[in-house]
Image (cartoon, rainbow, N blue to C red):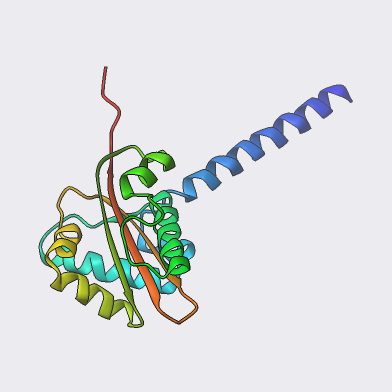
Length: 171
């Protein structure tokens, strides 16, 4: 009886470990199919449009990183709450937010916008702006997080956070 109990406990722990491992792997979203399960339809549309612009220029396509999505969503919500379009709301710059999140970055950038328009309109606006266009077409970026929040007056605040993770040095 004790041997059977040990086997049951071992199998239960093993299954739990596998479940936790699979759940943590789901946070690193990288394919368009996984993206649909992790981000909103509007965020997914901006992701597709952004990668479409990169594809036209022969650049590597970005992958969604849920840590960057969380940062982007928080920034959009903060801007919407304060009715303020800015990279720095309440004194919290992108550098501060990235560092606080623990995202190990080599390259990082951010686009923000406010509009009642569609994702197509937002990406078109960003592409017409030199600074925003540079971020969208930056060949150093590998990952993206997108966040959208709506203020009480109906204005939508959009944030894209771009990044490339710092890789561990080989010994």
